[in-house]
Length: 578
Image 1: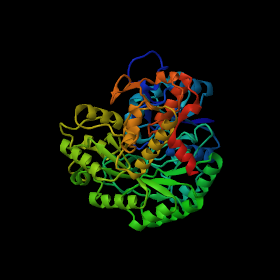
Image 2: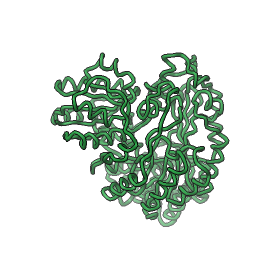
Image 3: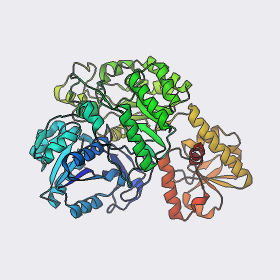
């Protein structure tokens, strides 16, 4: 029996063109399995052309299910992450026709369902004997899916045991059957292979070193944020926020064995704990701090600001933690309490940020807009709150509405007791894809798309910009150099390098940028990157985001520029840290 666990391609054309051979700028790319909120972003890659450094979450539920099923059924199990492969749909279908699997498992959710249902029907046309099994948040609508689509089974919740049941003959809607703590800690480690092991990447919090291992230290979260997908639909069955949500912890011994295995096989240089909430209790965190002290490589985690003592942040730092993500959601306390139901005291969160920064760690804040019942003025409160915090980086996204969450249940019931301020009023914008929702909110008002924005007040980023500026200025003293990328990071670099502007005006630092080509900076004309072929000096890559720099490297190769001419000070800094 041949079984495929599949994370299919997700590409959206930004404008019309023939076929799939178009530059990355022509595409939005989506993340599906592995993301709590499947969504699309402007791509740096294109179908069939991978660029490292884009946000690429590891599909945890699928990775664990693949190895669990292989162990418990003896089936020949294949794991194919087409998102990480940057595979085209045409290439994906060719693979399916060549391999002719008996079962194909696909994890799906509301934002990607418009595309995924087309994939389901196309698979059935190509392979009528193949049984298609759907998992993920959309399983909340399992009966309707089975009625309307050629699907063999729909598994609700995390799907290790449900997948085994299907391969043993079950069909239809397979109800929640979560792993016990004992089963979790006895399960095989999640699937990885040489092709994709180094492709998973989350650039935040600042300070990540590639290759990065993405792992879990726990499953679940007890909090009941209105929009949050996995605690409501995968690690629990709580669509209206009134049920019990549980947390199951991996034992330190399990985590250590897994990390040693992964690092030994793939040479990971940093670890990111992508739990729903990593720091649920001091004892659990301190146990993993001991593990990371023994492992001895830098690490970071997705955290909450109010679930551990201040001393525990120090223990994290001392064991190698260089940064954390913190979820704030809204900068308005009433919205957080009455719409989101996060129950996070924003002043307490502010104190935690200052303590974490005092310890020398970086902080990435996450914020969302367009909540049901949220007013434009309350959204601006979030802007003001962000401005008041010493964050290194932050992201602003639209609040997507995904099946199985309280936010989706609100649409069905019209009111939720646990979310008294939530209302589907005339201001509310229904868009399941949070990336697309933020783009629409930005077009309609005074909100800017802010995924992975840097904060100029960040000491960590200021050090990076100072190093970049110093390297440019030193090189320009000897011979003219080129700056490729006249954007936020370059302007911040100039701000923190007083001599750099004079070198630009003197022609010692020459400017190249695709978007701003033809414009000038204080009289210095910005040229298109194609003109770099006529320049024979060093070329400095200025964007902070790794995916942007890697895309530039591919462009440089197409232009015939030797790799030896490119200066990546960010990468040089990372190498020096080793």
